[in-house]
Length: 145
Image (cartoon, rainbow, N blue to C red; front, side, top):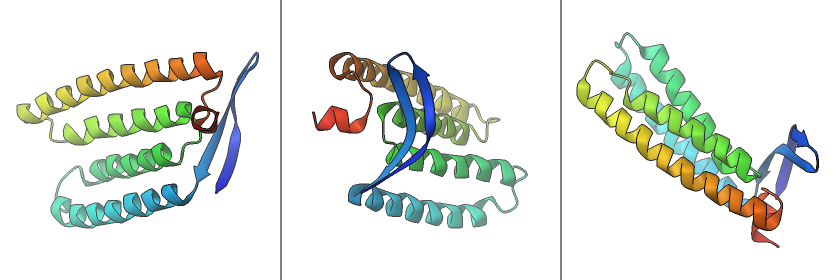
């Protein structure tokens, strides 16, 4: 298991939150899965989107989605996991509404946005409960107390 300390992110009173990435065996499996499937999606999308006017915009959303998915999987604290969660939700909204001229795509994007907000509320409530009961948002303090 490896923990990479990127930097100290938030420091307020007794609360500190560091921006760390954790890589263990399970994370390594997910990293291979995300990058492997992401590669296949990129490969397919190049052929499918080749002549689309928004080729660069689509791939920027797709690359950002893969980046936030990797942040979500490698996060060392629930706060960083929440950042990955929000990034994945934002990129999902942008990818779903890519062809925004079609009303069906807009409706689907709105539905994804609302469902993501419901998930955000549950995630934030769980983070509050972890912090109140354990005094930390770290993954290890939650599961190995």
